[in-house]
Length: 180
Picture 1: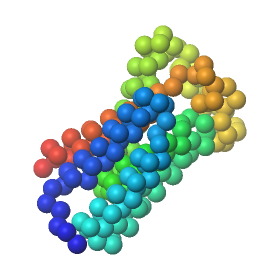
Picture 2: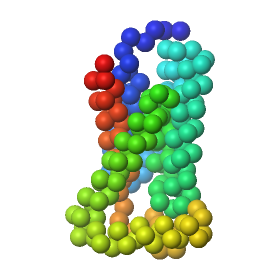
Picture 3: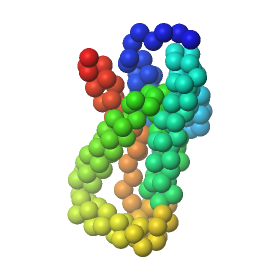
C-alpha cells in the first residue's frame, strides 16, 4: 500500500474523468463506456493502492451510492445512462468522504445551468411549469418517464449533464484543496 501525501489527488483525477466525459457529452451528447467503465476501475485501483482493501470498499460504496441516486433520475426519464455511469466513476475515483460534496455541488451546478439554459432559450416560464408537471406525474406514476417531458422528446431542453458533474467535481476539488 502506498502512502497518499496529497489529499487532492483523488478529486483531481475525478475531475479529469469528469472533464473528459463533459467534452464528449457536449460534442456528441453521449458519454462513452470507454470513459466511464475504466474510470470506475481506475478509482477502485487507486484506492486499493493508496489505502488498501478498506479504502477500496469505501470507494466502491461511493460509486454505488452516487450511481444508485443518479439511476433514479435515469429511470424517471430525466437523464441519460452515460450521466449515471460518469457520476459513478467520478465518485469511485473521488472516494467516500467527498460523496456529499459531489452530490450537493453537482446538483447545484445542474440547477444553475438548467435555469441558465431556460433563460437563454427564453423558456424559463415553460420550464418551471414543466417542473411542476413532472412532480405531479412522478407523485402519481412513480419513476415512469413522463409521456412528453423526457429525453425521448426532441422538443425538450437538454442540458449535457456531464457539465454539471464536471462543475460539481471542480468545486469539490477547489474546496478540498483550500480546506486545510
